Length: 549
Ligand code: NA7
Image 1 (cartoon, helix red, strand yellow):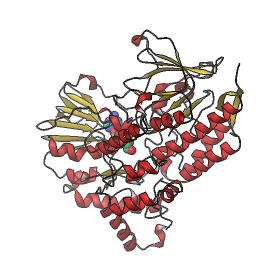
Image 2 (spheres, rainbow, N blue to C red):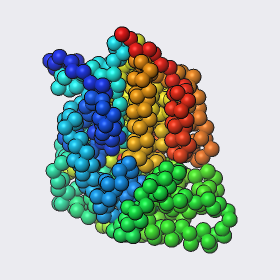
Image 3 (tube, protein in one colour):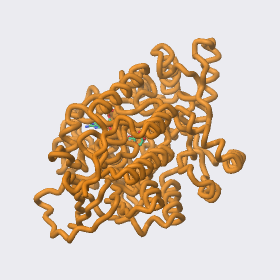
């Protein structure tokens, strides 16, 4: 989870340092698996998480409507153990937050992980001691640790983005970020609710807030393509097939560009007539899920004309569903579809037909300030009792720059990445030895299957640590050249697609001042082959330093 360096105001009395082989930051999807694997390898390890329980982002984001929006639905899970696969019953095609959290608790209990997890604890300092070839780590409780390695499972979607709107702090009612939803139920009944933001979180929450609140005002800066989630009970035949053929299913996931067992399409949209295309899209729209973009045609994310055919199909749906033509017009997106994260919703556009819902289009009526009782836009004042901020995250790199480890010669990660975010293999960065990232920048992460990616990346780290021990190596970091080549490679893969041409949190464009560059490796299968290749070449691209006596 997000962490910042220790500030002067939080002076705590420090305890004597404890020695560990590995400190894991975060007890979410990535951190928990790292903890398990590192412990299995016989190393001493402790995981720290700021949350009140395990689960990482899935613990924090318990807003109404929160669900998995990965194209593979219930295959968003750990894959390494057939036993775990057999024992957990995924009830739906798009599991909700409570189910994912139940799953993570099930895994933590089955693997007995809790005894090495320290909750309600922020890692406040991570500082490299070059002479000792160790990291000094401090927590918000004043504990100190000395560890040879630090693994960051801090999450690509955990560093919350709170908008800099004048007067926000003066709001007198409840103000809730979707990424830090209260543990106790929030009562919207009889309340005038305002929600800022129409990304995945906003779109999942809006229909449920509208159903409960007296009135809902939606403040929209950028309209979104929202595909019906089509959530339904999971077909028992899919469960049976997966359980009986797990190893094959797992291989299919590994070979998939989205990390899901369903095959992505190899058919060009230009092979079909307009009527055929409509039929294909309509079938997928009715079925629901992200398949409309990933399982229909192979060129939707590469060719602008192809992309526009799907975009226009969805725009037609919006015009058809939303009764007020002015409101429908405000909801029409005009950029390439699926190049911001493709959002799944349930009755999202239908919600704007309700009498108690009002859409405020911020493009011609921006928010000017927030008062204790309202949101004030250029053309009016909107009285609000509860304000929901669905304003997203400093995604992919933000949780790492907020943790801000300091490496060789005091090099702070946030400084290093101030103008350009650079890693080698998305797993490490030059100047900060023995520091590893899971689902970090320049990995497939957010556009692949994150639990499975965490497994594969962790395995690589565990093997690298074993190699180091075997060869009396004290420190490892990538060379600057290998890192530069990696960043260029990630960008060149992305440049063959439409993704980098649209502003999104994949490009860092949602955070003022953040370097603008595409942060996702868009070819999962090739990425994991590359990890294996680098290991087989005795960690080509890395610099090793002999272990000091
Ligand atoms: P997103 O997708 O980043 O969406 C954030 C939304 O908040 C988006 O509509 C933004 O508009 C809006 N926003 C952000 N700042 C402001 C300000 N200052 N004023 C008005 N509107 C603002 O975050 P989510 O939490 O929805 O989703 C993140 C991922 O988490 C999601 O993809 C899932 O995978 C899980 P903008 O588009 O920037 O104009």
